[in-house]
Image (cartoon, rainbow, N blue to C red; front, side):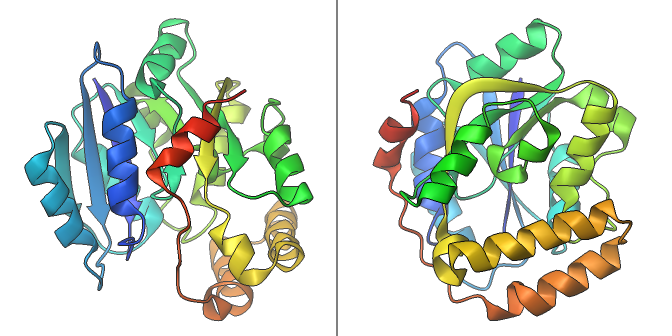
Length: 254
């Protein structure tokens, strides 16, 4: 079984769309479950999940967790019954039959990997950044591309490092690259560029690069989070998703 794990916090703008997308883009031959881990939303995220669960035939579990993406995803893994874990952001839209594509890779002997990613933006830099995700280079990886990993390998690594409030995806990815256990599936996953729209492409990209370099130079989890709080989190505008369920058609194109 494939267990889809989505950490959320105040994702009312996105959660219904992503659930509709997931339930209409899984293959009919595989058994999947969706586990949504709420970190204490103050909007109607959980109410929307409950409403969708009532009308959907999909297996959807909603669990509560202390806030923190690493902690939430680890809790989701603990509650998952699948032998393959698929970690997904609440504003990302995997390709058609994504579950079958992931399972095929695992059966080929690839225990972990992601999809190439396309931002919902026409900005030339974000288009270039999207194109670069097709390559296997470590520098082209990020959590927006989603992450599949077998439970066996996930447990062997120890899951996500909960000392990291940010950058937790990259810590796990680095561990997988160090073990030479990573593959990029050559199908598009769509991802929202909402934060780039809120903050400005170059401004936000500069801060993301700075965090990357700080980690490369040896910054610890607290230093990275302090920088994030000062330069990204506290200056964010309210969320406003522009993604629609229909965007799945766009991201299915190669």
